[in-house]
Length: 601
Image 1 (spheres, rainbow, N blue to C red):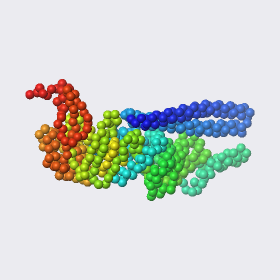
Image 2 (image 1 turned 120 degrees about the vertical axis):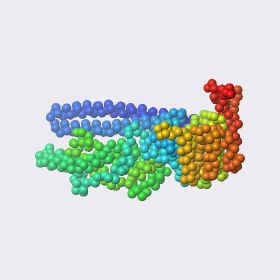
Image 3 (image 1 turned 60 degrees about the horizontal axis):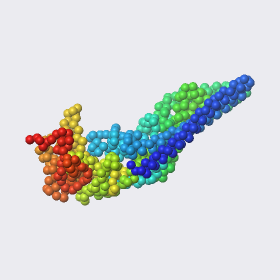
Image 4 (image 1 turned 90 degrees about the horizontal axis):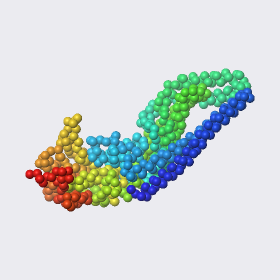
């Protein structure tokens, strides 16, 4: 764990806690003030009634209501600030937990796991203690899907370079990152944005011009006639007709209002959060440019996204008020409340129909980029790889596995060479062969997603990774281990045939058959891969396979991991070396559990 990074997060937590305490005092103070307002209002109203003064009674009630509403509004503002700073503290606490190797509070991406994918299962890309769990700082469903897509599909050179530049820009502003995270985090269930986007396309038509004019004027007519009714009884007729007309309009437009409510009901809190996120995006020059580009051709490129999303939140919140018992009917009588705000909402949809899908696509991209930038901030010693167009290419200095803790991680150098090779990795049990294969694969996934890699330096070309490691049988599907291996090999050959640049990582092939067939089969498979001009690594315990270097000089190379043995004690250095392994430890490992193979005749 980097000491300066840890210190930064602890300082942010302390700052947030001070602000939380301050806002709590405000919230508690306004609670007492609300109680005082109620008691004072009751007293004033009672005093006016005692003096039999109708006007004073009405003024006392109205004044109490207005004062109470103002206090509630101010208190709600402080409640929101308290909750925001609480979330801000949670953001920093989560980063400390992640640095300490504890679980990330964001999704681990288990729903994206797929054993049939070319590499995600073998390289621990999704699930608990996975690469996705290390990276993810996405709150919205769309962002989670996009980040998962980046890890499943390597990008081309230009796209990788674009992401790297944006990640560097975001990583330089930790304050902006944490504000953005805190704004988007919510304990509430997220609104289904895809359903919302689809439903807005079939939003009901608004009001005709005459009805719209009446709805705008009805509250003014109602309250003027109500005021004049104290002096002219004829005004009561106007008051009654206006109220009745409002009720008629609400009933007449009820089907449209109901449909609108089904589409936008209960989205206001989410939209307020999203408007805050868009406001932050607009304040960041790099992300603002990304947002402007995303809106090109949508018909909404001239609008301020945060402003329009906030308008949508406010309109949908007002429409929700019309459904509240007692309050809703009164507002509908006074001012045709539901019709008024349905009309405003219909107009908003008509003006901004192309806005939301494109804007939220950029929001998802921003969250995915932010995830990569947090990784870089938490690991400032990691580097952005150079991605080159010529293929195949891979050179790494001090390459380590990103999911292994810093204090136990071992680093290795590796170079693919100028023309590409098949590298045979031999070695003792537990010496590090499988981990090294995964180290190569997972860093390639990071690099081609646009993220920094766990290395001092790295250069690679854009290629497709394919792994053959965790072969699983299935009783339900009647698939034995050997059959599962054959299926994976068939997929590998097909994948190499269909894709131009593939780098494969094979860990101990044909483990589900006898040793003689295993050797002959493994040798034949590697020969076939050579004939297909395949490039990759094969880890094996079978030393006979290493003889292929002699028959395919310049194409097959031998590397190994070994151990040091001292009085039956084994020492692992986990360092990659050129050549063939000559030290093995199976007998010692068996002896540790009480089995001595030297006594077997």
